[in-house]
Amino acid sequence: MSTAGALLDRVQRQLLSGTVEERNKLATGVDADDTSFVLTYEVGGFREGTVFEIGSELVYIWSAATGTKTLTVERGYAGTTPASHSAGAIATLNPRFPKQQMLDALNQDIDDLSSPANGLFQVVTTDAITYNGSDRQIDMTGVTNVLDLIDVRVKYKSDDFPIVHRVRLQRNLPVADFPSTYALVFDEAPVAGKLIVRYTAPFVRAASTSSDIQSVCKVPVTMEDILEMGVMVRMLSVREIKRNFTEAQGDTRRADEVPPGAMRDSFTNILRLRRDRIIAEKAKLARQYPLTIRV
Image (tube, rainbow, N blue to C red):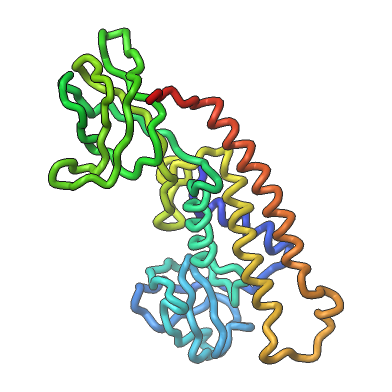
């Protein structure tokens, strides 16, 4: 089991490739509305006009008192959310890959995996639906966010769950009549009884870095590497844009040492590997969950 934060830490290690960013620690804890931070060690590069990250929050420094190691700050910089932080919490100066930005990239990639272009999904089973043996359409009670049906079975006996054929999924129905907005449509009515419905659904976004990738986002362990590569691509593409800013470029050897397109080539290779992994996982799902619905 992995949290979103643990996955992002692995991505960050790959992206930084051994680069050590300047860090410090809080000497005392702070609340979400505190605007004064006391550091444990010498302020070093923690000066006015710089930004540091603590947890998933970015903090802007208005002034720094080197004698008392005290920073006067603006909380929740760049749209991040102010939070309480304990004494000893790590502050990272001018992070190259901020956690909140990486979390946004992770959620974008989670959404992307379930898009029609990629076709990956989670499998959900519900047995909360009962059929009376006569209705042509019934609500999919308690069901949300359905991509497609895998199969529908009816509990005929305690040890017999035959597959129901000639059943279809209908979506976007009036809430007043179908609370879930989804309905099962029977072109050939089965016997009355409890239905066991398996269907595909999109993966779920991570609400925070503490969200579990398997239990909350519903992404299996075997697909975690796909998410890691997706986050890498999204973060590197932003760096390439920054690299190509033309408004003001100082005198530097970087243009010769790291020519334009170097980052693009890096994430193109990662993108190719990600595509191969998606194809492999899609093939595995197709074999594991063959379509049994016949209309």
